[in-house]
Length: 242
Ligand code: PGA
Image (cartoon, rainbow, N blue to C red):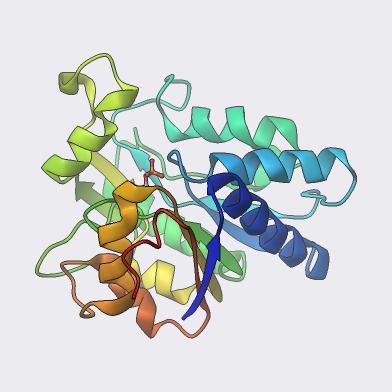
């Protein structure tokens, strides 16, 4: 596992965007795994700037997002579809047909999950997966527990995740309780993984990820078994690394 410590979240975003941009320069038809949340915002802003400057093209790229809330239609203000279109897809030259997010309103969830994994496989697998990390160690919505799922699946959000996501909704009752998420197997199959964590609030979980046990109670710790995982943190999130 490779660790980079950036001075602050903006520098971390520039570094992450540089790595993603380099991936696209090296392989324009790259399959990117993308994430939502607060962490990747500086990364997407920088990718948009790099695109505007003619450095990066998404013209031949394909993307698969990690997750989507169950019950929120794509046009919902807080859906991850809306997030991705607002912050990245509408601002770069990506072919909309090449962008993929799990279907939060699928009539047949198990079939939709299977189809998502099949689509990733048909695209040739994920070249570079961008990840954030929850305070509880989740990646995507793979929440801590005794077991973890391999493929894309319907997941119950942990109470702490509902609390953490409450800030995006008018009240806690409106926070979806379930999501469709890529599984740990899908994430581990990505050829490269880039996990970004910023802020003092992430310092404990970053320390657990980097120096603690490999355990299903910290799902991100499984990344220690990945052959090309890059952990990119800012100084605040790195505070508890020895
Ligand atoms: P955040 O979320 O980027 O908003 O901190 C990360 C996550 O929960 O995976």
